[in-house]
Length: 84
Ligand SMILES: [Zn+2]
Image (spheres, rainbow, N blue to C red):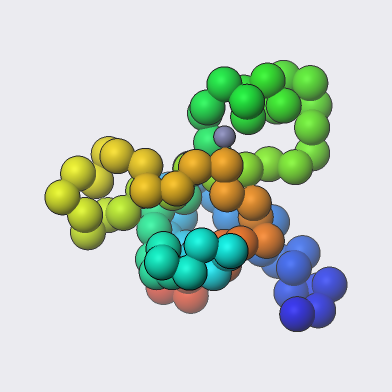
C-alpha cells in the first residue's frame, strides 16, 4: 500500500462507514467508525498523541451501540466508497 493511499485513510470522520482490514481477520467487514473513547485513548488524545484510534460498531449487529472493536488504528480501516 502506498504512502499516498495511507494518507487518505486519515480522512475517516466520526460516523463514517469503514471497511476493517486490520490484524483481527475474524472481524473483517463494514463498521461505523467513531473516535475511540476508552481511558487509554482519552489520555493519549489529552496528551496530544497524533495516533488517533477508532471505536468500530457493527451497524448490522444485534446491538448497534456495542463496540465490536476499540483502539483501531487508522491504518486498519478504509473509508467506504459508499460515503463518497
Ligand atoms: Zn481506545
